[in-house]
Length: 154
Image (tube, rainbow, N blue to C red):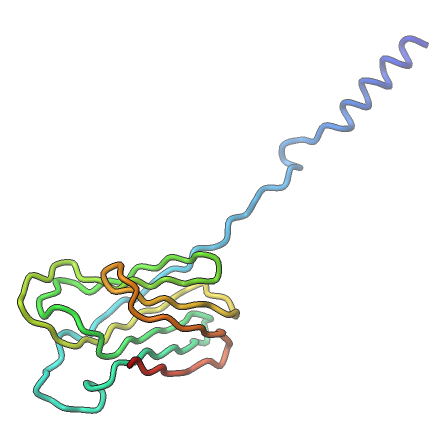
């Protein structure tokens, strides 16, 4: 009888223990990646075209599921070095920080910046556009497979 009780207790403890491989692991969400950043270079300010005059942001969902973002006529120093974009996803807020690597000249001009965001979901995001880490413009947008819209910035 002692052996039966001892074996029963041992089986109870063994049955209640999970192997390490059975314990579920927490899967972190995939990071949204920025790809293919490019810029127009300093636009000629002597040309008075409609594109130069109006700052805007175009969001276009690609067939691959990536989001193409084009920020037209964003103003930076005329000697920027490189124009770069970084992102950070906090909850449903997607922060996009545009910045220059240099910027020592005493002049400004408009640029077009284009980049692709991979791994975005079809959901509502709060887009926060920052320039040099300072909040510049914010909007809400629900991403969908057929999204192709342009927002004017005043």
